[in-house]
Length: 376
Image 1 (tube, rainbow, N blue to C red):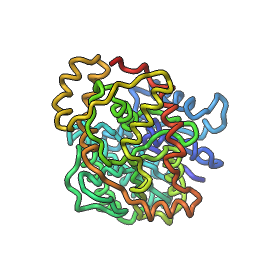
Image 2: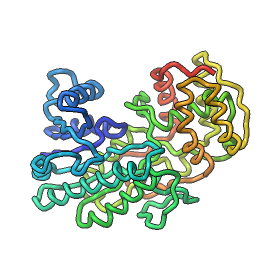
Image 3: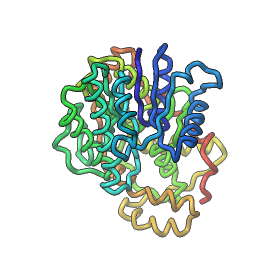
Image 4: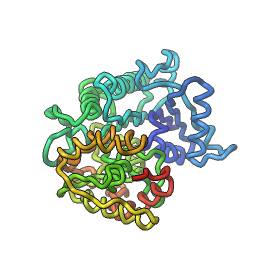
């Protein structure tokens, strides 16, 4: 029997992984959920059942168990007895949980990246000693490439020390911990790029950085003031393919010790001017007129942000607070190599989807489900 312990079940990637695990007959899934108390945990699990399409009485629901915990606490805040029981029962571990805030202090970032990684490794060692553990899959990010120019290789990156933000730095440190302290464990590290909605429907549980970037590119949040985008490209992947890839790797011990890049690669990434055009056209198709664009230098735009915030509404001011970290990415043209990884997935029947196959439904789903646009 396969019993998977999954963190991040309420997040973008983890929420897509659970249905795939449950599709395997007799597979058990234990999910870690952050909640105020047990009652709140039950409510949150019920909401996830609804998201997963598990109706009352669905037999799959009986194969899901929730543990109330917090990745920023030692041992996830679980008792020694619960951890011991997990290590005796769990055959597979998939660690998806993370805080993707780009403005955390370094202490906060390490608490949500390195500390939970060490907890996962501890559980893995106990499971391996008990002869139960078969596989650990850890979700990292292409962000561990930091500010390094050029194309990111599919290997460990001990030389990278310059990062855009504390999130990247902490995730890079978590990778170092994996290889320094996880020796002998069957570990695969996954580095996804910017994860968006599902290929066919565009559905996703949370609208994260990609969608905020699209709003920015439309000009709606800056009264049309926009930096020169140049030839910068954006690497995206649909969440269903990412979840399929992780679940496949979890069931394949041959991937242990590997770093897999879940990304479009330099040739598959979309140019930002093209993404801007497509999003503005999608807005116009819905009868919304995006503002006329006024191109300025990035330095001038950064200086104008306080003034734009003063003229805009509260919602726009909140969005602008996270704009500077995004602008840092726009200033650089990076790529993430995926030759080896994409060949591995293609051989497994999981070819990397082209952005043209999912971008239209992704944008459509977002525009159909976002809150009312910000007045300009």
